[in-house]
Image 1: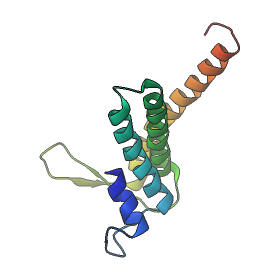
Image 2: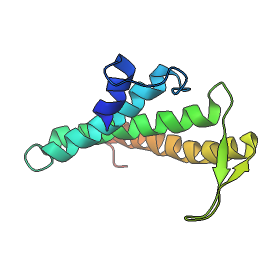
Image 3: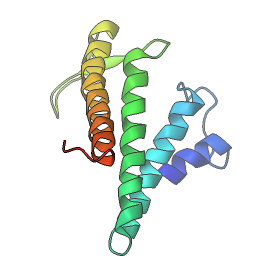
Image 4: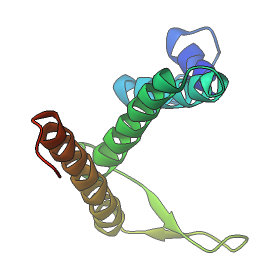
Amino acid sequence: MGLLVAGLLTGHVPAKPDALRVPAAMLWLTALLFCSGGLGLMLSRWLPKPVAFCGVIGFCCFVAIFNWVAFGPGEREFTRGKSGSVRAPVSESEGRLVFGLFAGVLDALILYGVYRGLKQRNGSKA
């Protein structure tokens, strides 16, 4: 899937000119997210350390995309609905609020992980 998105960005996969209404940086993050996940799955049996690095890269891309949806410039269109039911439009502020809350939780997890890592690196117990 990541290679497909990268192909769209590089022009190797044809797309309608107005089909991509997202900044190229967000699409590159999406491509990197899927490529790191696929690479992690391929390496999981033999090389555990690169798999962890792929996981960190994928998680950071995921968090960056959520932050862009919540706080980035431009208009957003959100919908709400249960699986199998009709989707209803939601206001932009409500959609950004939901994405912003989730992005804030993910940002806090990253900061906590960095804090724990630095604390362990300095030799003190976390």
